Length: 404
Image (cartoon, rainbow, N blue to C red; front, side, top):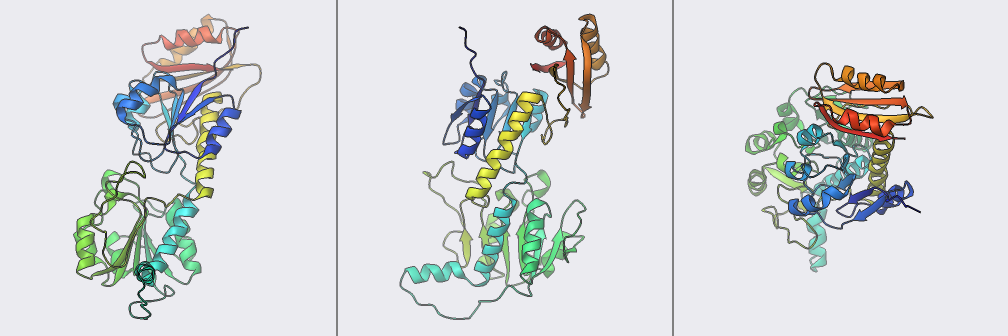
């Protein structure tokens, strides 16, 4: 008896085992890597897999994507997607998913903990105690109640921080490039400069994009209140580290907590070096904002479910680089999924193929962006695979597959 080889999925960087368990229960063969593979390794590996799951260290470049003939989707088991060439992925019909919600609470709790730790100089006092020094003093140690927290970026994480901080008696102000509805008594600041001038603590929660590159540097530190604190749990390129070091040494900034860095070790085996090391009241953590058991499990489930829905029914809901389509399944039909160049006449060409084959279309939905169109179509036909092949031959088709 001929056996069918299950489609294969690759998960790298120690993605939570719940993802492997879930996907194997759905009929996939899952391979795991504990580290971030290089571009050369990925070029060799990618052709074997229908889906690839990564975290923040693995880079999916255009060269890697050129080898992804069988790879329908890539999942970032984290919030950020800047490690994937999204434009190239879209052009090759590869949908990219992430987990924008699953670790928000974990990051928010870390920010609150770091804010208190900075205000009480807990890092330095803890280190001294371990060295046998008894530094019992109230000098420079303050409560956070009644202080002002400035949140830069009021998305999923920033808004959670806002709620937690306000419940502890802090006044909350925030700045976001996109208009956002304040939660609780939080106050919108129209300019970043205004937020910096009034905040006792500034916490950053912005994505890594051109507009946020080096957004906090010498000019911004000069605007901050003398004796204020900076917390960065967003992206390492947002802060100019050399300028932060200077502001700390000049005692204009009283302390900082940094969880992300411009250059980070690829694994736990590599040595970590930073100009921020050995400075007073500086908390350095190894990119662990979302590294709680709860968050990693939730992320594993969230992206694994996105894989299942996209691979099995073609749902692209939540994809960051793709038109979002979520068409309910019709029993007794075959579902043809087509990614094509967004140009006039493609849908007509596809429907002509279906019509000539005598197949009946039971449901059809087309969504487009400025470059591609994504068509989900349910047909009554015993020759759906043949129809798929004919559609794939169209000059403007990028990727076509069928699910039953």
